[in-house]
Image (cartoon, rainbow, N blue to C red; front, side, top):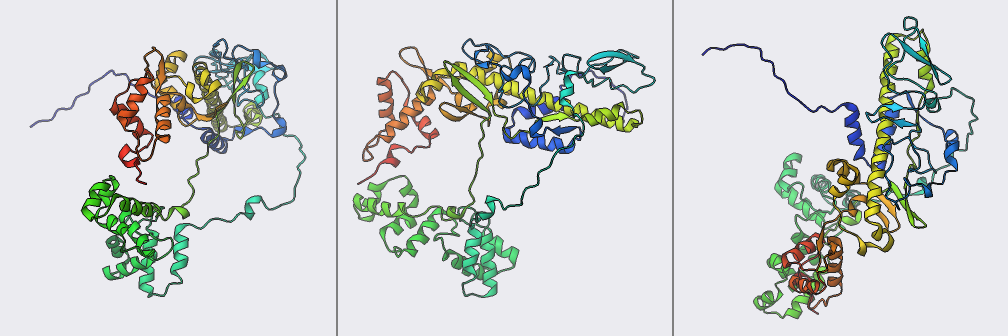
Length: 541
């Protein structure tokens, strides 16, 4: 066998994401809280970026008295488009809070531009441009290292640090915050260990019991590790582990440290003194059949009546299936509206929620360092790189805001009846409909609507909830599947619990209203709403 070395030249095309484009894509799918964290992180990493002080935040004079309720781009009556240039017009934004960037415009290729010149503009070869009072003049490139890649114009002066100024600093009294008076809740592990310390046992068994408690999940079950695994790690014998488990299962809340739901319910019945009742027999020997509500078969097999089975089921329903959730940490999901959709007269206004987002600018101190001839080349290169990064961040923030506005505008146009009258009037709408309306890719629309909320006259709603499939009724009208699900839910809530509606009966009722669905479709919608079948819903009184 022989090997041969050779050189080959191949021509291929690849899609490479630049750091700016990658950041833009990531920012589109961020929530408002995540964006705030990103901006804070960028401010810590980029010394060129700084936050405006509250007293320095102001509204431009020509915008302070603007009547945006009559502006075509702000209202949705005429279905007007937002200007392609996200900063050339302010009518589509909220004037109560300043925007991240208050510049004039961005060009289509993403370059920052203002009235005096482009933010990222290449100077003519061999020449450099300086700005003095907003007018450009030629400079000798041999005597000055020009900042040709990033050009500061007169309009951009307002985003630069005006320089150090003396500010009065008010020092307040250090008073304790309100949170200092709030007590932290006790979790399950602390609650069990406090009881275990008062239990009389040997040190070895107590250590094993502490290990068992440490392996319980938030619901109080021992499912993440077996007794054998815990014993091997701690070096305890199987007998020690069994004794430790019995001690933990005797602690409050009753039913804790069970390996499954069946064991959890039996522990609670034994604690209540019902270990010999029919309920314990049902759970111990017929648990799986009990879940499928096969009560007549169980009654016949156990020599009891269906009424007796129903009474035992009432007792079982009073037990706690998740004994540890009382002490489980609260799963807090913070929701903050990205936009406010408010109605003024007959028009809807889309207003951005900028509360809590830092208002950014580029510090003038670093421009002064670039103008200083004594600044070293290394320092100049470093500042140029950081300014480019800052400008990219500002442009991407504005691109994100502009994209969200365009999507919200089309949503309001299509779902105006829902905003006026309520959920029963929501219309079928797909992501591709908005994608075609604004000329953006489907994945971009998906990123925009995912995890972002809007404050509407119908409450705070996730943007994705506006999108739903539909079907055509007998009158030829499109009806949202969400409305159909709501009808099914109302039917089940109003049914007789002793004779619940079957899927076939629900399908017949909907067919009389002009909406023909199969039994399988009804079952699918019911499962999506997490509603049990008719057999599981039946109650014997």
